[in-house]
Every structure is written in C-alpha cells, then in structure tokens.
Amino acid sequence: MSGTGHPGIGRRFPPASGKVEQAAISAFARAIGETNPIYFETTAARAAGFRAIPAPPTFIFCIKYQAATPVAVLEALGINGQAGDLLHAEQNFEYFKPVCAGDTLTFSEHVADIYEKKGGALLFIVLETSVTNQSGELVAKISHTEVKRS
Image 1 (cartoon, rainbow, N blue to C red):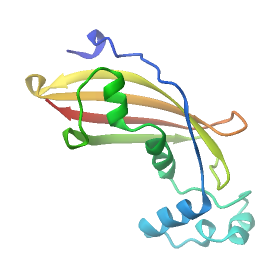
Image 2: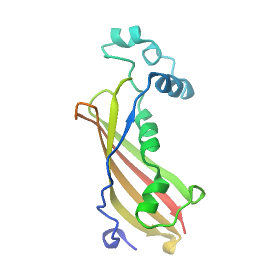
Image 3: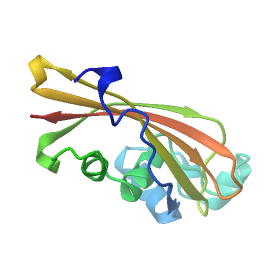
C-alpha cells in the first residue's frame, strides 16, 4: 500500500461536534502547567480581550478526540485496530480564531494520506480536520498522523 493507491485516501467522515466547557479548559491548563489567569478567571479573560475563557493551544484536540477516536477511524476504513496497536505520531495546528468556553465545535475530518513503512509493518494514516464554531466560522485546522502496527 502506498499513498496514492489506498482506497481510503480522500474518505470524508460525518461531522462530529463537541462543547467547550470552562471546567475542562481550566483542568487542561493546570495539567500543562499554565498559570495565566485568562484560563481560569472570566474577568481576566475579558480584560485580555476574550469573550470568555479561551482554550489553550492544542486543547481542541481533546474535544476532537472525544468526538471521533483514531480507532473509530480505522474501523471505518476497514482496518482492524485496537488502541494498543496505535501510536499518535504527529499533529499540527493552524489557528484562525480564538476558541472559548461555551463554544460548540464541529470537526470535519478526511483521510489525507495512507502509506506503509518497514515493509508493511507500519501503516501511517494522515488525517486532516477543519474545525468550525457554532457560527460556522473556521477556527482551526488540525493535521495528525496515526501509526498502526501490523
């Protein structure tokens, strides 16, 4: 299997949505060692120009992961996969608008590439996701690569 030959390339998945909760943002911020009060206090967030507590960078991947897991993507592609067979290898984010507590995000994902390495022992699945908010505005694009052991 190589990039252009896999039938799953280009496959689009039904959009999935998730709500951005203030408590989840604050818990994520604490977990990554963030101390900026904008991630914990509405007054600090508004004073900094945000409409509500903003999500730290990469937080949206948590919401995406709740909406559609890599194992579910593999199953949809007809690839037998278990969580223990997967490695989250890479991710990239491009941001366009702030994501804040109270937003509802919709994730529209497609398979950008699928290829093998190590003589077929490793299968790489590259997924690209557009993220829009409740107003239909593009807030981010995510690209991530999952690797499955054969």
